[in-house]
Length: 123
Image (cartoon, rainbow, N blue to C red):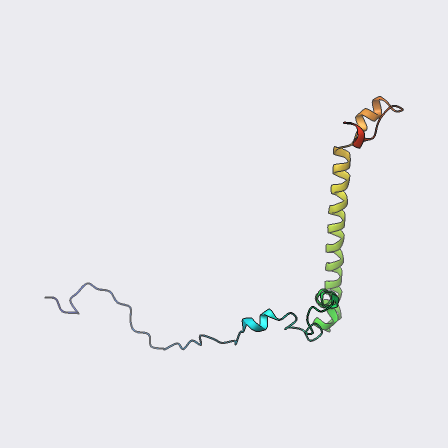
């Protein structure tokens, strides 16, 4: 028989430092998560009225409560404003595209006075 020193088994060296790991570093509770408004005092009363929905939405846009740096607040306001405009322009461009795509412009050019609306064209 081979001794342990003569065998071909490769083993990693024993760790010199023992690592202690806390299995539950932050106390969590699903019961607390189930309550609406557990993270904010203003909406902790619960969904008795629709006010808590407006407060929940408004807290995300209350930049003064997040930070007191005027430059950071200005950047957040500008980015929110720019994002809102991009959504509006995307919506308008879709309206223009679909209005042009499904219009009866070619038929209108051929018969100016005797052309029906596009919605009544197939009737």
